Image 1: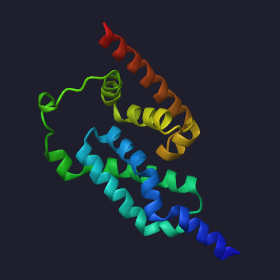
Image 2: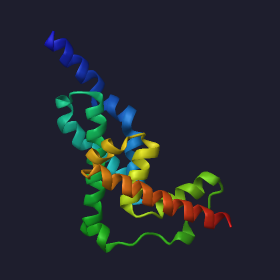
Image 3: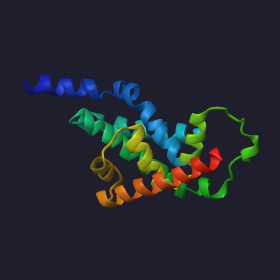
Image 4: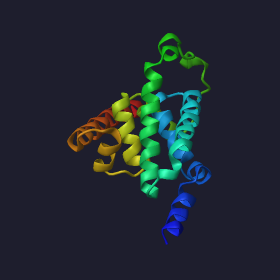
Length: 165
């Protein structure tokens, strides 16, 4: 019976299944934290390489998702402290092709937020995590997460209203 249960866990937590199910979520969180599609691609690759090392130890599907998101946060933090990141500059914003859509206005407002606010907004609204779950992923106090969400909402409200005027 234990071997059957182990086989079920391995099936849902296999690297292929995890990639198919969570690659988009990992990529989006990485993009929100780095504001760069190239860096997000690198982080996505690094996250699943790290997952390959431990995938047989996964206990549940929620454990897999939480672990992948935690690795994503750690990788994006590591990127910010890397020599490469500190010694290079991004492209000028004028070189980026303009996009037309109300959703891009909201996305650009979210991307202007500081990282600590962007991350909680993404995890709460895009991934559907509760405050307590975000606190575990980010290793923060739940009241800190609530404060970050509140401040982020206030900043977004001001930014979007200013853009509409």
